[in-house]
Length: 530
Image (cartoon, rainbow, N blue to C red; front, top):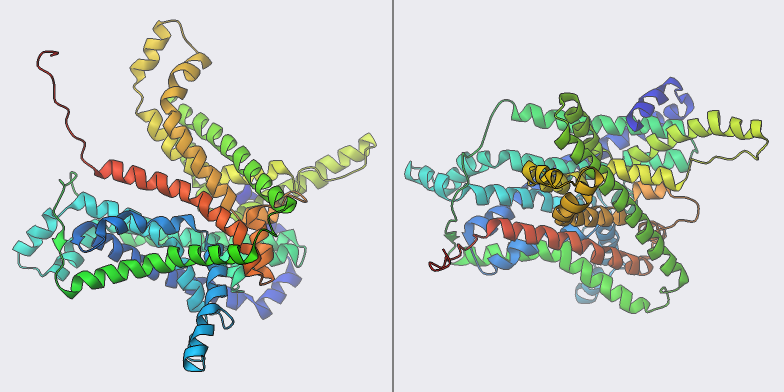
């Protein structure tokens, strides 16, 4: 529905708005978006792949710590890291202040308010996508293929480029693709840097020009970028297949010697420090300086609204994902599977695109159906769907259904059909089977899915900012309001709250990663009991 109404919005072409955009901003929006995609794509690929290779295939001081710690930046929303970096690195920030005290001037220090600054922030936030997937690919490879390449005369660098990297290419491409989707969807970070892209243009068209049609038409152009990224990745891969037939056994990592060990440690520590330790420490400093003056009734309301929205969305998304998983299991229909696959594509849609699509559709229903009906009934006409809790909940369901469907469907597929048949033979049928058999066995997957959706909704900014009901400010909205006014310290408390909430799914990912990669000991069988 959101995509369909976006396409239909072109029947009412907004000539004045588009002439204004073409004359003033459209070229800059296109250039900024393309530069951002290229810069972030190369950045996350280089950092993610190199760190994944070091932590899985090389032995250096602190390797086991960095193996899981490098996933911690997942917990920090992009817009939080953006305002922390502006507050820390800008002219009046603590770093340049110290530089001026030492050297008398800080003019030589590069400006953080630049294209490079935006790219740096997004790379540090999104590199874990590539790191996590490339890490899994390198663990699966082991050393077998590399050792075979070395025996055939290749140097270590040649073996990496010609063997290990091509085999891991699908995983790396998937990670880069996720990072690019998040870059296109980002609003908070680019808005904090005043770096105009299509997401900021959509917001300005809506709240600046008060023109929903123009916002919808801009959203369709943003979707063209998303489709182009998918097409380029598929075309680049072609018909090539890079895969190992079976999982490699545990391998002994390459031991780095001499200065290589310390360079690897310094590199991993620098990335972790810039992406996680620095922003968390700076947020803590600001919270301590600000004191308890912002911990008041309004902050409690922000936390309450965030928790209520996240809980309602988590429950709704998990219920829908559970229905889709059962439909896929019970009805082996080709078109049903295609429909379920299409339903899971919502995660690729930026929140701003979803918001515009849903609100455009709801505004048409309000204006052409509900308002005339209210006038006919003699009731004071008012819009019921536009800016409602239902509209925001629908956006969350479409956006995050894929997040919940994965763990729930995986858990459901692991339950044997014979258990269902055994329950039926014992006289239990219908919803009782779901309640007494499936739900207890799916509990871990349901809990994981609900937590992931819960945290994602708490951090979601574009859809919440555009669609929230009147007076329903959340922690993410509060951060946007404070950062738009340059109040970094006052934005620190809600930001730190979101970071602490974001650590929950990171710990879940790390636990699952360790569980998959650790070998399970074989229990001894007592001969007497046998």
